[in-house]
Amino acid sequence: MKIYHRAAIAALAMSTTLASGAFAESHEMALSGDLKIFSDMSNPAPRAVMEGMIERFGEMHPELNIELTVIDREAYKTQIRNFLSANPPDVANWYAGNRMAPYVDAGLFEDVSDLWEGDLSEQLASTKGAMTLDGKQWGVPYTYYQWGVYYRKDLYEEYGLEEPQDWEAFKSNCQTLLDNDIKCFTIGTKFLWTAAGWFDYLNMRTNGFDFHMALANGEVEWTDERVKQTFANWRELIDMGAFIDNHTAYSWQEALPFMVNGEAGAYLMGNFAVAPLREAGLTDEQIDYYQFPAINGDVELAEDAPTDTFHIPSGAQNKEAAKAFLKFVASADNQTTINAGDALGQLPVNSGSSVDDDKFLKEGFETLSSNSPGGVAQFFDRDAPAEMAKVAMEGFQEFMVKPDQLDQILDRLERARQRIY
Image (tube, rainbow, N blue to C red):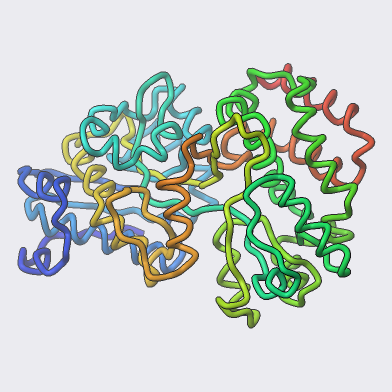
């Protein structure tokens, strides 16, 4: 479907509260011609966000014809290489980290490092690493969301538990819950990515962000003793009985009732879990969030925060307008607007943005903007190549069920690493 936007009256643009430097600079540029944008925001709420963002940008540039093509999200994933190679748009949205690497390596994404010069580099600092390959930046982020431990605050209060700041307190809380016939964590590993969330945090807390990314990039052997230490930490929880039984039978949604019913005390999950927890009847007085605690005090805290992005295809015909649009997308005021609770309901990446009045979004924004000095990872299945991610996540799930098989699992992952990279 194609939507054409032309500005009608400039006064409407002035009614918005977009007054950042990036917005003002974009507004002053005289842009003309056609700007073709491809998007995978096919669900109703994200689509409305995309159309509204384009409308506001179009009002700033009445001589610019903007053409938006919206493609179903799953179809987009299979079509992106084809349309980047043949008759590419001027702007396309995608994902940060390793998910953009194939298109960077193939010369299909434009280097936009110049957009990151000055204030924007500081404002988007939390994701700069995820947008950087070969020392250059290849797009801009527009939204992300935190992962962390969502827990039953009422149960913690009942048993005198506090949010843990270190590994020993984390395990101590767990033991108290177990002593009262409550599992520490719910999880559903039928679809393997949930186990990957545990691996990400345990590895980043044990060995640090740089090591974790080197492992995801195939630069570290899976049989490395440092990797084994991550699994040793994980096994402490498994041997305690920290996780619900039969978790391989549940999807992440099917594992929610264990927390809702008070049979499990917490869930390591993305912020998207909050809405179904609320819908299931838990109030904000019953649920809360904390950052996964430190394990190795010598490494800085890093977080999982999957980041959605905009890029300029190298074959774009109107790169001037495309760069202006990316700068507009990345501006603090635009990111405040598009990530509001009645829009995407996620977090702006720009540290100068305002966050919707939701306690979980506010806590997540504080975590990602101010308390993730180690870096921001994209999640294992985005940071590692697809084939490696699949093999590794199968291994993570197997380890949670059969921890004694660790050596065989790591040998298998190492053989896969040697084959894939």
